[in-house]
Image (cartoon, rainbow, N blue to C red; front, side):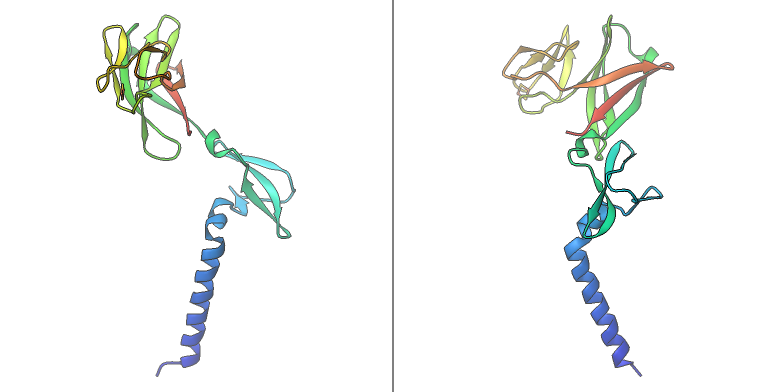
Length: 181
Ligand code: FES
């Protein structure tokens, strides 16, 4: 026999849980109360986890961790993308770099006498990927050309330089740092 009282209790608790999720669900996941094993105990204290800064805040009488405003774009990922020996002086290679928010970013690497230049592969006109043609990076779609050492526009219609990322070389590898934007 079915216990009517217990089914009613189950129904009410499921309904209350659904409303609670609707009201606070997103905020709750965005602001863990116990960040990487550290409870939020002192208001104003900051803690960095995976490149994201959280601040201990008072929310309705309770101390909780909240993402610091403006920090979403500060998450940093430095990735070994290529062996140093795979990029000769003056040459260019395109690599896919994992993006902090998922997916990948296509990056054009060029070795110059001054070091490695890392530029986003997407043309700043309408986003088509650029490729090395002779001494320049060229977009086949409408013909924009860019300087592979700086990303500067040589010929339009693109009006802005290619997005530049930090690149470094250590322990025989090339590293690229991609920030979210
Ligand atoms: S998309 Fe590159 S020139 Fe138009």
